[in-house]
Length: 264
Image 1 (cartoon, helix red, strand yellow):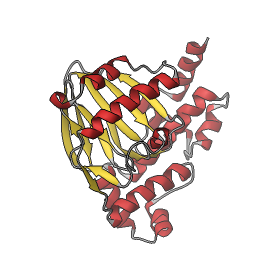
Image 2 (cartoon, rainbow, N blue to C red):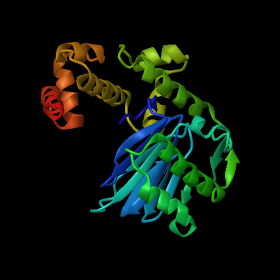
Image 3 (tube, rainbow, N blue to C red):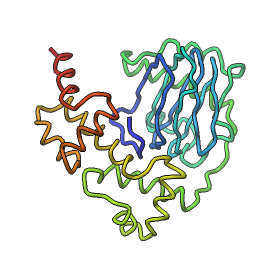
């Protein structure tokens, strides 16, 4: 999971969680829909925090910074859909030009067909079946949403540009100074964006991008850990091991062994 301008491979992802999500600030060009089957979930959208309860849905439009945090509820079940707008083929409004006045649809206003769709949609379903359920969900939810036209501020535009840039260059040496030179602004302005909008400092942000990329290389290639460390942009094996353990709870070698044992 990446707290950045996320470039995803799949047009439609279905994720079922048996616990609350804890996920740093990020944005992407996809529609993100979360339905709470039971329990609760906190989500911050454009710096406003919402708390969802059983039967509630949140609809997050493309290019909006959002994050999830836990509230300590012991048992929560959720369904998360991440959808590329192009799969709807113009059936719905251009969601990059409009944002919801309120992104939450509470349980009394969630149509029974939406509830049925969330209960029945599965990751392993055929694509056509998942697409059908998604059309049902979107059609009903958009009827409950009031729209407002997007008015972007310079800091919002730069937030997006920063995350897009870092998603393409995170394996390179990057500092606040180099970003300031790239975008022709002061490094203090960029630092403020990370602190106030993205909620994580640049160093930790880059570390998470690099670790996620490294974990993908471990899962999908036979490259050595030394090679992966360099290719992911780490300046030392020691830093790679420390950051990887902090995020995944194990060393890269243990992660690699676990992956290989799983595939046997």
